[in-house]
Image 1: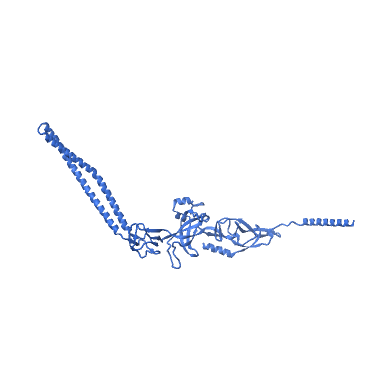
Image 2: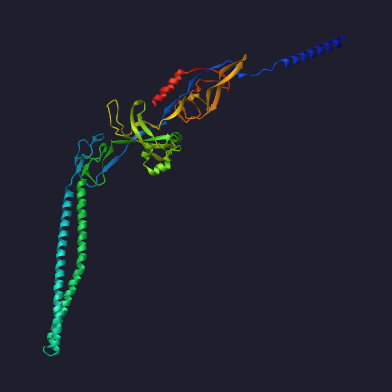
Length: 468
């Protein structure tokens, strides 16, 4: 009985303890999670302001000559003269006589062709004289035939009166027939002589063409520079016999060079979005209409596209360039789009050891930019999985007082352009907004922040803008 009493007392006490615990828990006030009540998290920010920036893309390419000419000999002969400066790498002015071959055989052929012209022309004059003689003779014979016919009629009348013998009439008939034959022969000559004349005229044309050919052959024995150029190859020497079609030397122009720059398609597409013709309206000028109407290079100038060529690692050496055209297909190996830019006067302002000329096969950096536009500039590191962290002002009530605090606001955004460590935004941001540029983890919308301006980052952004 004593044991049972103790057990009941223990169970009763346990039940009372549990009941009291439950009541105490239920009487506790509900705890609410309030991010705004937490201690502010320190962050670094920059204050946005618009900058006028020209969208650019940068690529690399190798310099090529605008014109690379392989000069070949158009006749066969022996080389009699080679200009002393006709050597690889030399610069030679336009119209300079750089090479000559023996012209004696072609001079003789020219004289023979001229003689053929003279002979044929003499034959033509002789034929014209004969043609005039035949016409005169025909007129005379026709007159004789008329008189002979009259005489035949007269004698036939006399024969009818038996005043003359039959033999006299027959003799007159024979004379008439002979004159008719002579008239017919002269008419045949008049019919054939024009054809003979046409043959002689054609021969003169052929002979004169031969004269011109031989004159051109004589001129072909002298090779002059077609433009101000740089010699890239030399294949012959003096006293060497050279057959027709043999390569003599190669030269390239020095007034202009080309650079084929390869860009990923998406990078060029981002630049193309900014291409707008002045006065073209919101939609700008369509490429289809522009290409049909004007030259490609002029179209890019109208769209405000500029280019600049630099030496990699030497940013102070630059050449103004012009976008000439876009490749008609993608590079099969790199899947990139080729853009051809040109540089005029690549030898201008050359300083030995300081500023070199742009020569073939030189590796260059090419910057292509559009018209300046208004952008907001932030560091690329300030983008977090497609979102920008910025400060938002909120008002809190504490101890019956309204307090303004800075909280985190995450906004999903995609930059219009990215250049290395910089991202540009055209829309979606506004002047005066504060963007977080420091690391923040965890990042919860609405968390209270304590902001301090990152002056170093703002200076870097300003320097980047000024360097564009």
